[in-house]
Amino acid sequence: MILPCGTTCFGKKAILWSVLLLVTIFTVACSNSSENNRSSTVPKLGADSISRSNKTFLTDCKILYQEAHRLDSVLMHQTEMDKPSANAAIKAFVDFANYCHQDTLSPVFLIKTAQVAKAINNIPQAKLVLDKCVKDYPLFRDRDAALFLLAQLYDEDNYMNDEVEARRIYEQIISEYPKSDWALSAKGAIHFLGKSDEQIMKELKKKH
Image (cartoon, rainbow, N blue to C red; front, side, top):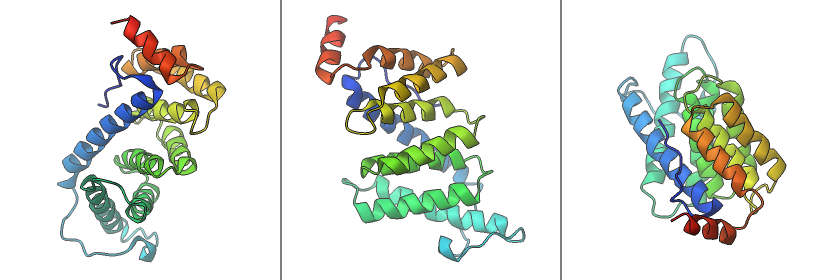
């Protein structure tokens, strides 16, 4: 389970980055736990050369997963993400998520895509895959986390800067997942809407 950022995170930007880090930890663990179920001896094949076929579907998904997992590992070992590797990873993640859309890791790779896209400031791509994750995987166990990440994109001044939509999504989390820890985080985020990082820090310091 992805754990939400607590009150020790200072400022909206810190909240976002803390959440993304926790998502990274979760998704890597999830990928590693599923790797044993996917053959490590399938041939290498570029995603562009794969066309959907019922006869080869399972093999195709193994190939796409391996490429996505490989590029995920490449990014995890980089001290500073370079754009070519990031774009290659985004393509591999989306290829797997779209082609193997019924796989339990598909929504996880959509979140990974959003993380990488956000890191290279491709906010439209991040929004697109989070929208898809939320819409296409209503039973995804971390859908509330995906909603929170989406709301944060709208919340941040230097991203989409739409407090009305951010509030709507935060309230959706509270309504649909009232017992979730993310609902508590959403309530805190609503309280901070319209406030600068400096104002947020002052409020948090008063509580300590």
